[in-house]
Image 1: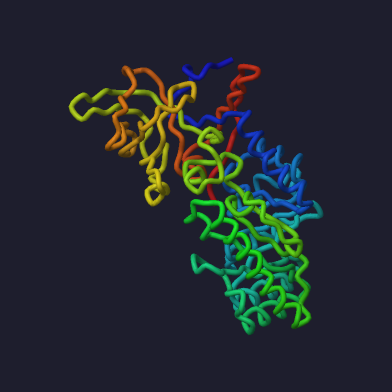
Image 2: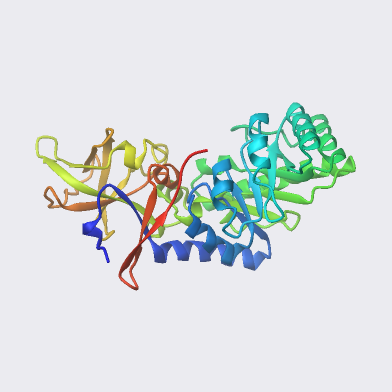
Length: 377
């Protein structure tokens, strides 16, 4: 049985109790509202965590890569929603995943791709269903929810071929918010604009069996609209510093951290140098526009105790530079080369993507389990 201080650094640590608490928090919210929930697998990319999801949320999941479908279709998930607007060169690989126990739904925002999908399914003799992706905050792909002609054209093309399943939206604007009142307003807007598209389609005799919306911030506001039949979220499984800045969790809820070794102490610049650079932490600076800027990560002692106002101020490929936040009277910890620290990430998805396994710390049993994960598209 390994101890933390025996692990090769940098490496990714998951606090098992926090992971389960985060999942149960969302499960309780869904159970209370009696709403279907579809966890996003892109954050964890892990069979063990996917199997835990199936126990709490059933057999549906969202993915952002085909690799996730291929790796996780034998973990109890039978209904995959592929979240990235589909392109023709991915259809053959998706079709190879299909079986009686594996349904895949793709997202579409253009009539040319709807036609490509219909023709592909006809030629290959398969069924890949589709939702129309909606965009109501202008942050990436999708059809505007009031774009009547576009919605009906795509919907009719898919429906005539027996492939139309409904609509999907994502409240990306929620990541720019920081108080519950604004988050509730965003969640309400997300639901109402999505239902505007549903209304347009319904008036054209196009039924939406799946009306799916969500982001971790909006799902956890507890806003509810009975006309929405599915919610989605992903980063809730770990949380991160960006989510604390939004106000949807406490810093103590973050289940993911990078264990790192001190490799040098630079007195000249009052800095601790560690072996976790941007290859281990990512370059994500998601907290830079929030009330509290954590640089490239919040520094903790080896046991996870937060060291107030001590952050990663700079990263190079394999070096992290730890200093006291400017303007603070805090002091660097009394530490020497060979000692270990932990870094809480700005963006859990980006940090996790740098690693191929989780070291899962079970404080109840004292054991550290290794859970494999994967990357790639």
